[in-house]
Amino acid sequence: MKKTILITGGAGFLGSHLCERLLHSGHEVLCVDNFFTGDKENIKHLFSHPLFELLRHDVTFPLYVEADEIYNLACPASPVHYQYDPVQTTKTSVHGAINMLGLAKRLKARILQASTSEVYGDPEIHPQTEDYWGRVNPIGPRSCYDEGKRCAETLFFDYHRQCQLDIKVVRIFNTYGPHMPPDDGRVVSNFIVQALRGEDLTVYGDGSQTRSFCYVDDLIDAMVLMMESPKGFTGPVNIGNPGEFTMLELAENVLRLTGSTSSIAFKPLPIDDPRQRRPDITLAKTKLGWEPKVCLEDGLRMTIEYFRKRLNIPPHTTFV
Ligand code: NAD
Ligand code: UDP
Image 1: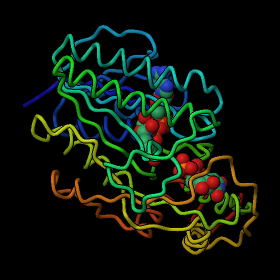
Image 2: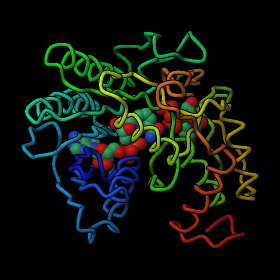
Image 3: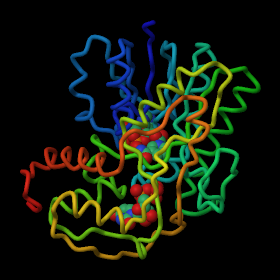
């Protein structure tokens, strides 16, 4: 059945893939974005699509539109960008959630929150399961994002309990792929861009901290499955690829797959940088019948190809 679907943060990395996917499924898509980290380049190929509409809007202000479903993705996700204006980051998560939940309440619409593995902070439980409450610094440089996202989850569950709102919450672990901007600042795009330009790969700390990297197509599959899951299954549900790598392993993979002769430069570890992160995806497997299909090597190859084109670097060239 054709639905009208609102996507906040629709011009961003994940949002733009979601716009594509939902249009492809025959839905009408209303993409809302203030272009803080989003880019028209990500969605310009959709402008001529008859079912696509773009609205420049900041979700910290109320929004009056009509929709059947809402995906709430608006929020900068890269530490560099969310720490640039931390007050606005918290406002985006908290006021943005309040505004979108209020909208969903008026419309009686189902609403999905793009939450994050950051709600687990620097975890003592490994791998992380959804019932783990996390270890988050409430006053550090990452708190605007972590606590903002935690408060957004609180709001979602209170609207669910208090107003019977039909909510869905996914906790997304590090995801990468095409449509990340070259200056995004997150590790996968940084390493690939540095390798292709022949610059040193900036490994923070000693590079022994771990992350689990999910390719964007897998993530979008899971988000849509979650939105379409039976009423009453609210989550939170972990979405990520359980393959776990140190940042040094990631750097070595990127060097090998790009054929780059770049070196590794060690830089200071950012404050409160989590030591380890890996999702337990048992719940997603059981409830959504989902598990990731793309391994890191294949995902990196596709992402490298995207950045080669975007940076205009011909194959077999590793610097500009
Ligand atoms: P992104 O920065 O590329 O996208 C965020 C989008 O939100 C951008 O288009 C930005 O312009 C928009 N935005 C920011 N503030 C806004 C505001 N006040 N009003 C309207 N639009 C606003 O990041 P992404 O990786 O695509 O992440 C999308 C969502 O998924 C975020 O909520 C993020 O927290 C969550 N998430 C992503 C990851 C990941 O690894 N990519 C991991 C965990 C959670
Ligand atoms: N990192 C790195 N070099 C970079 C960017 C990030 O070594 O150029 C590290 C960072 O310190 C962290 C991991 O890579 O340990 C993932 O960082 P990212 O910003 O991608 O996401 P996070 O999971 O920290 O939000």
